[in-house]
Length: 257
Picture 1 (cartoon, rainbow, N blue to C red):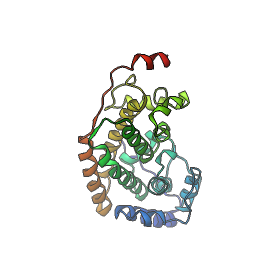
Picture 2: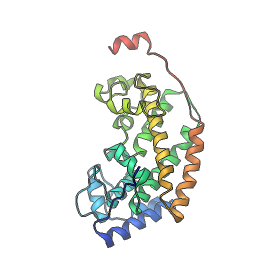
Picture 3: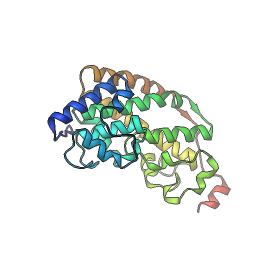
Picture 4: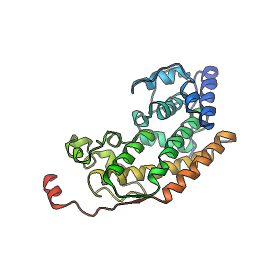
């Protein structure tokens, strides 16, 4: 794949702030990373404000990201803790996998920080439904563009059936898309929280591979930090053991024609 290169339009301001963000994330200093720009904690719409504060000339564009846009998503990941705010999971995965520059590096480091945080929870046997939901929700906020169903899952397993059909694990197109990733069990797998868990784990594994590829484009302390975090992520990934579903129970199938 040809390297995906994007540019910072406002060179001096963008370079200084985005590099400061990258260096803070490499050091694991989330507080410093959060304070690289003066934009206060905010809702989804603030990705535009964050990108402009980092030096973007135009509006935040997830389909055509520049270094500042990548930096904005990095801040949203570690400060707002909402990677799913940035649409376009495959676009961000390409950035993670092959883009060069301080913004791309900051994004990779932010993703790895969040995944490293989740690693102890995911790297073991998962057979409790509430625990499965908590993991899905965490993955849903840690990966840019992740399926919004994951972060929206209710903590109470019995409330999943009350979700709007198009947003539920059983019907959401983004869940089905993740289920057919290389490590997924297929589009027809399971139901409810367990279907969401397998989809989210397939996305997790794809993202870990993208980070490993992206590390090859990096140098110095940022690369060393990413490689160290990947070691933790990969070790946990190798230990994942989930409760497996076969077919839905008869009463569930009747209620979900």
